[in-house]
Length: 246
Image (cartoon, rainbow, N blue to C red; front, side):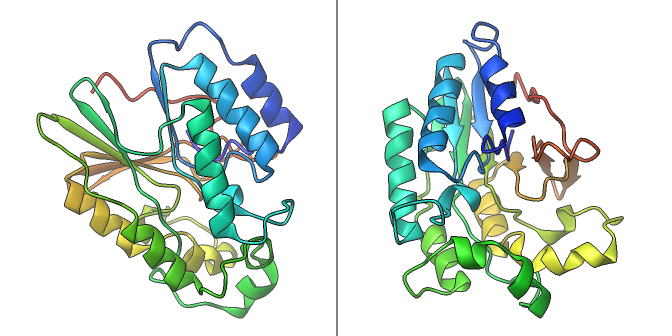
């Protein structure tokens, strides 16, 4: 799943009510955007860690906001989030489960899906909620891309990669109304797709768009299972999605 957004009380209530027994032998992939407030993010990860055998996580843009934080830099927030994951026993590196390798891919948008536009300037919250020490978005994308180290794939039969951001823009449904397409430049990065292909992943999980989808393109199955905001019942699935066994 992705985009749990436990900053919303209804979403936190769903997490709090999630079974503490049904998933103890299961692995959960969380493709970012759990909460922007670090205390709530930490509590959410701890709740998930108690309910699953393994929890694999990659941060989303909301997780790196500093607007409600004493931290001045989103790079500092990233390091703080990583520490919260370690404290909760949550995986932020490649995790092997049987013969399946689950690989998180860090990323950021870099306008490879379209040029910056003025509508974004006034509507996209990251521009005020994130602080990148003078780096522009393309540079941030490059920094995170370089942090994705090739994992050991010896003896692996199936590779599942996952990212918060979209690895390719054609994952967006054709029926998206034109008035929302100004958001396409901040949905993801072609760098992520190159990582997916370099890994040889058969399955890739992503989030961010809040548009649930499952599609196979050029031999890779891409899946988005976003929980989303409370108002998004028409486009988001308010439930876990089972992928296995793989």
